[in-house]
Structure formats: C-alpha cells, structure tokens
Image 1 (cartoon, protein in one colour):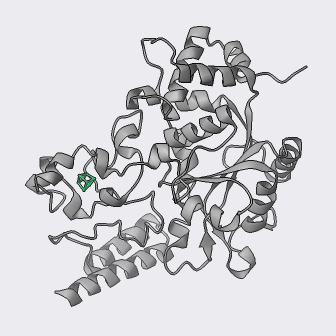
Image 2: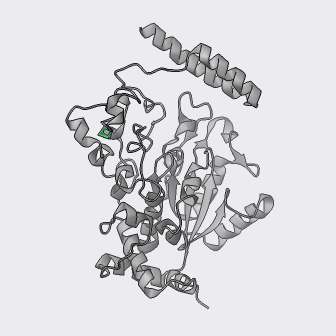
Image 3: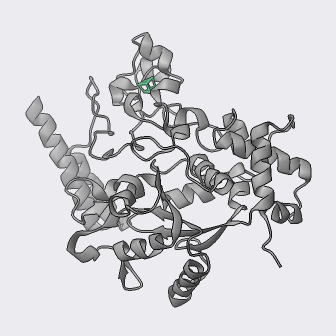
Length: 375
Ligand code: SF4
C-alpha cells in the first residue's frame, strides 16, 4: 500500500476540501508566492477567496506527496526556537504545516529518551536516507575535539556530520545554528560555529533570529515540501522572501525617524509617544527579517511595537555587534557595583547560583568602570 499523502492525512483528520484549499492559499502566501497578511499567516481566514494559481500549485503538491520526514538536532542552544514554534497559538498555520511533516527525532519533544531515542534516530536516518530534512538548532562547539557538547557519547560535530550525510537539505534555525549566536560571542571559549561553517556538501538554509520567527521557519519548510528545493537565498544563506527587507523598511515608527523625532530614554516623552528608537540603539536599519510584517503571537506585536529597539538578532555577530543599547545619545541608569552587591545578597537568599551572579556582577561592574572612565 502506498504511503498516505498529506491531503489524505488532513482529510482523514477532519479537514474539509474547502478548508484544504484555504490552507493551500495560506501556505502559498507564507512562501511568498502570493500576498498574505500577518493575521492570515497566523490562522485560517473567515472568507474563502477564489484559489489562486499559486494556491492550486500548493494543493497539487500536498495532494500527491507523503509527509516530509524531519530530524531535529539541538546543540548549544536554549531551545527557544523549538519553544517559539510549539507555543504558537492554535489553531495556526504553523500547526497545519507541522501536520504535513513527520518529526522522526527531536531532542526536546521526542517521547523516547536515551538509547531508545538514539535507536529511533538511527532507524529514521536509514529509512529516509537521502529524503529527510535535517533541522539544526544551536551552535556547534569545535574546540578541544568538540567536547563541550556531546550527546550519547558523541560530539555535536560528529552528530551533525552523521545526520547531514543522509539529508536532502539542512535548515539552520535560530542565530546560533545559522551563525554561532550567543555561544560564538567573544571570547568564544568553545570554538562555536554555525552549521554552514561545517557542512559544505549539502544545501543549507539559514533562518536566523533569536528565536527564529515560527512562520518564517514553516514557510521555508513549506517551500521545500512543495517544490522539493530550498527557496532563493541571500548572500548570508537566508530566504530572500523573508529577509529581503530591513526592519526599518517596514517599521511602524519610520515616519518619526524621517521627522527626526526620537526617544532618548525608555521613559521620556518620545518613548511615551511612540517615537523612533534609533537613539536607544535600534538596529532596525541594518537588520533583515520579517518582524515588522509577520510580527509575533499571531500578528499581535513585535519588539519595536512594544517599545524595545531591534537587537539585530537575525544578523551574524549580533551579540558582539552592539545590539544592547549602544548608540544611545543620553545616559540611562545602569546597575552600579553597589546595587549589584545588594542584588547578590537577595540572590543568595532566594537561592540564585552564586557563580552565575558573580559573572553578571563582574560584567556590569566592568561596564560601570568603563562608563566612569569615559566621563
Ligand atoms: S524604531 Fe528602529 S526600525 Fe523603527 S524607524 Fe526607528 S530606527 Fe528604524
């Protein structure tokens, strides 16, 4: 018996033909084949419009293809990309696309653990050799033989190489997998690298962000599902559909930027009036991503809309690149050595790890020293 197609699976799960055509239109929109609004990107629209040629292309692919096998590896990461994807509000388009794939192995979500999980992964890599998509979340440490991240006695480097060998394509989700992210920040003690630094013989697509926008990830996956190939990429390996414009290009505060109206602190009149956050270090003008259009939480908001400057998290080297409030032209209160000492005392009382707090203390103390030196 031939394998169940995505269409059959959705229909068997209770989806009507009409809803299936809506889904196909939304997937086409998500892939950038036709226009789609942020609200549409997060759920099914109420009204059905006549299916576009692009929607019919998607419908045809979903009607003839089985679910796409996916193997998902996590290395040096916080699991934030997995978290963002799974916390998307239901019922969402993300859910529907995820119904169209078969996640064979996921270190956070798999029910199996230990040897059982490892066996399941090996079986999936064998069964779907040459046909599965490998998703990687997290950076890969390479110093000292890669000992800083190991699973089941194997280093992250060897696990990546093993899984990439049988993959049809690799998706690096989040800034860590794409460019090394936080683990690669100076002085990068573990020698962290991104996937594309290590895998040269497979198509690799980067979906950077901290975390990656769920709709951007699923839109890219949907493109592979429908066309069997990755979408067109920019010079940093990102899909042009989602990373073709800067945040600044589509920012709702742009008019204030053009008018020279800026917030200079987080509680001044400019901030209260929703003026431009450039003077607070906003990296929107040099950051390519879809935050300003797709937004987050079902199109509800994104950092700049909520009053926080863009940190540039979809660009290489963003952690060292000055996302955190550099470029401000008015002083903002920073923690002092004295206040941090008090925080340490509170931390000790509530059981915060002293080592972690001391590290933070040192960094803030250093920042305060530098600030004083420059005065
Ligand atoms: S808030 Fe940032 S992205 Fe928006 S207009 Fe100002 S500088 Fe540009």
